[in-house]
Image (cartoon, rainbow, N blue to C red; front, top):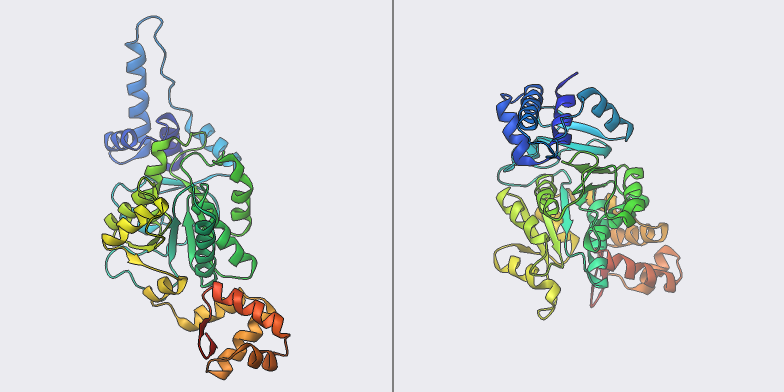
Length: 373
């Protein structure tokens, strides 16, 4: 048996409780085998001190059998001491000792330190309220789709509202040939997706090459406090956090706070001044978060290769959209519907429809003289 076996047994016995695991890790001299036996000894002593009729504390499970059961569930474990563990998570306050995952291995595209700039598409966490408006969900999906189409990885929490819309946007880009993927960070064990109605969404994430992760072992319930705890992992995996529609009490604000502590950037989509769902968002902007109105604002903030972004946009476009984009690049000046219809030989009705979609996706812009990329 190795450290992973003993770690998992300790995690199961302590229900993944961070403080308790930290205590036994220290008692074990940073080794999980020693931590396991220290925990086992304490439980035996506690049980021996019990009076007749008092509840017996369950001993830690057999490390070998527990690990094999975890593997049968299709779950893998990566410890913070192993090379495959994301470097970014090692450097955050209160880093997880290990993470459980299903799906693809995590590609570490986060950077600790300043400045947080790179030519490589980053991981962006997209979060917001569970009680999102239709417009908020549409915005989150659109941002996630365009960021994923440009190669970014989208991280979110698989919750209702903004989280689900963000994952779906990344899946849209993947279905259209985009390079990005999506990570769902769960607040409970990976053997039972929560909310249950998002099991199909979780399977789509896995099928598209995405990843489900959690710091809690299989079998653990997603209690309310665990959603706040997991937010530090969501921001820790990312170079930046995008807040879409967050009221004053939104858990997304906790993610933003973690992001600041971790030296990540916080982007916020503004909303109507009178809308309660944006009160938390506007507070973040007043505190110094970067206001963004299009995915291009975020791509520009990270100084991504513009040619790569254009290529990614083409990959995520329909054949008609590709014809229009090609024409706009060749013309190198604003063009109206009639001119584009003449060049592409598409019907004006189709050109108009495709231009509307490209505008929504932020790939082109409109001026008084016509359309440009």
